[in-house]
Length: 263
Image 1 (tube, rainbow, N blue to C red):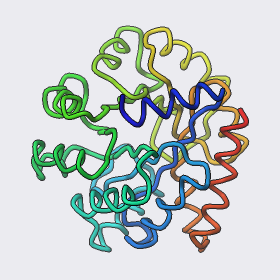
Image 2 (image 1 turned 120 degrees about the vertical axis):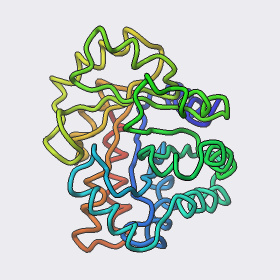
Image 3 (image 1 turned 90 degrees about the horizontal axis):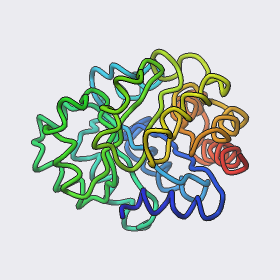
Image 4 (image 1 turned 45 degrees about the vertical axis):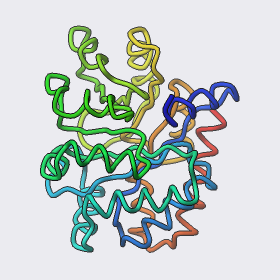
């Protein structure tokens, strides 16, 4: 079992849902993002989603796009992102880390080299937005052979014909994108999300975690009540954009975590 599997098993035994928090590696600086990641577990984060900066993040809205641009401008690279995870593992061997990003940096780095170093750095899973199931031989299957979960996205347009293909070779959990569009746009509506989560769960035993459009503790609680967990990213980044300190951002993260855990 991976750390992700163990985390969901533990949460289920406690009748709790999973809170997944996203941070862009290197934003607003490498040092500050590393400090934030180190503080996530004590703020109630169950799974850390670590963004890999990329120049053309097609699934992301302005908030995360700009976070990636700041990170790249600060000199953040794939290698340095793995170093951040490796440093975190010196103080925490339990909290799962999921690396979220796009295939180009991994392809350029070399898949075999990347998987070996990601595993060594303590990465537990991958969300690679632009690799469809038809390309599983590229990264998905090698990643799972290496002991990493490969987490797939399902969306409101993933119909009954497409869903079985999306679920094939998916592991760890299924990430349901709650809205049409990009991160940070619109708000997730539990009335719309509930039937979709149920539809996905009818086709898999994996946990279903919902992300996109969740920006308050109340919204996180509502979504977590109908899923196995909730992801928040843009709202956390916006706290830095408002000039908040790491401690203040972690206070906000703790309110999100409480909302999810109280669901």
